[in-house]
Amino acid sequence: MFKRITLILLIVLALPTSNALAVDQEEDYPASQMATLKTWVAPKHHNNGFFMKRAQRTIYFSLAQRMTTDNPFMLYITFAVNRIQDPDVKQYFGQTFPFLHDFNTPYLQAVRKESQKGKTVVVEFGCGLGFMSCMTTLALGNIDDAVHYNDLNTTMMTKAYDGLMKNMYLCELTPSDNKPLLSYIEKFPGSWLKALDTKPELIGKVNIILAQNVIHFLNPIESQQSLDVTMQLLKEGGQAFLLAQAIKFENSVLDCYKKLKLADKQQQKRDLLIFHKLLKPRHPFSSNQAEEAYFENYLKGLSESRIDPLPYMGFLEFDVEFISNTQHLGTALLGISNVKRPELIQPTLLSDTQKETVLPNGEILAKQHVVGNSYTPSIFRTAIYLYNLLHSDSHYRFDVIDVYPLDGVGTRQEKYNTETAHVACIIKKVKKEKESLTVNTEVLDHSHEELKTSDALTRTLNDTRGQEYERPGLRMPSGIQAQLLSQTSAQNK
Image (cartoon, rainbow, N blue to C red; front, side):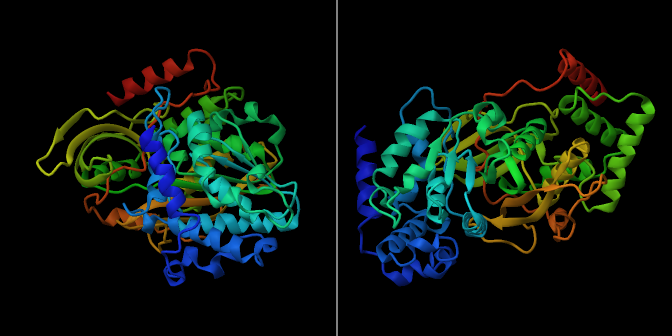
């Protein structure tokens, strides 16, 4: 309790009233420049100098570049899960990531654009403390706009959230319409995959969905389910901003990835039919000919679009050995071994540390077992293509508006490379004008160029916050899961 009070006091000193920082320091970063803020903060706030200055300072303190020991605000929101002594809190639940300029700024700009058109509803999945949900309120211009803030960790949504927000500028400012900014936010805990049951009133009503560093916690089947929930929540023309952990290649991972790229038609068909059986159990194929035609349609799409031969090629299982500091932040990767592709229905996992050795310098030598579902731009594109194919009978499809890699501090990269830490994907719900499926291939995809490099990882899988999700029952006939597992295990042998 004493540590928590101390941290909150540090936040008070560091964020709302400190004049220690000169304006030019805040103007040093594009994300916190006042000109940038005015592209996404609602115009009704622009003439309130005090308000805008507080917003600018908060963005400055939340930047990944400012994630340093002299920034207690950033340390609190990033590691807040470690500050809550609650036996029900799972490791890394409620994790909050820094502000990533080339992803978060376009998202906020899109929110403002929608709000200028009329009533706007935003949903954020996996929001941790709710920092981005709170920043979203600054972009809203209508009295009836709303932000629905969701996370699995109810503790983070109450104790940690309230403790942080009470010491931020948001509670002190009075906008011109006299509506407190935090009153725009409605919390609802639970799984992204169960949102249709939790918030049925939002079906078809949401303008924008944000899921930042969440989707890589889902296995391939759950990932497709999350896209279906997203489709049903969004109104026509609505957009989803998705951010995932990127594959960081190490030789053994690269070798496995290359083998998957060489998958033969039998393996491609096997994976495709697993997706269909698990996600469309009420629509079995009427004959072998129908099954074959479906597969040929899939292959045709692969040949017409530059996407991966297998869906979710970043879904891998392996052991990782690394060095971390006392805050369990990875500082050096020593190696990855025993890499393989798990079954598509296997839950993602970041195991508790299996082995720890304290080194003379105080750092920790650690080993973990990981089942992760990392992304490249082409993996995202394949996932969206697969969703559209599985739902070819729907009146709507997803169009990929943009997909691109970012480095660790949130700067957009022209090409996927060894410095890539995240992959962003922006999709839009559109009504089909004709039955044939289309895949947006206008955005250049450089992810395959990454396969030419095999540099060792320079950072550990810190973004893989493994969790035991409250998993909804997969929509499949009784017994089919065990049957598929036995079949695929036999084939693998």
